[in-house]
Image (cartoon, rainbow, N blue to C red; front, side, top):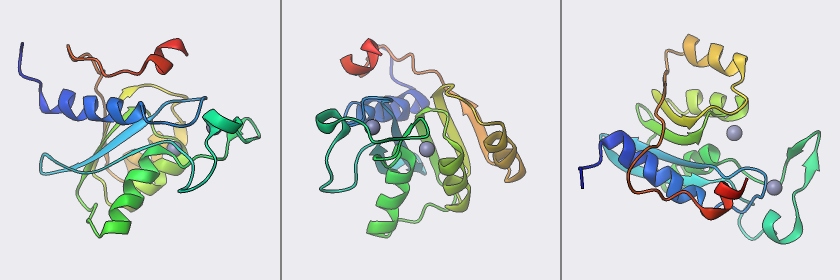
Length: 155
Ligand SMILES: [Zn+2]
Ligand SMILES: [Zn+2]
């Protein structure tokens, strides 16, 4: 078996995290990396102690499930909670970040976003990433080892 590249290794980690998602609408994972070291990870899910979409259904407002905290936010907040600087870090996400996560990523000082799949790529998010000089690169997850959850394959 070939040795995994760093990109595929971190992307695999994000896909593994995505398999822990508790929302039925989209299964997302994010891994924050600094100096080739994983400093935080997140998936989209409810707040601590809250009911899960997979148990009680999504909480829909204007076509979005508002129950969950996005994977990128969860990863950034994990750094805040445990005092891990995100300045100059990189983030690996299974899907192109939404506008709110885009702003949080920029504001946290994250310098690069690697995403596996396009997902309603917001033109304003693209504009903001560009203006902030954040590197954004599509890295399709094609590792030999596939951690993709059965749930996602069904969707
Ligand atoms: Zn949901
Ligand atoms: Zn988001």
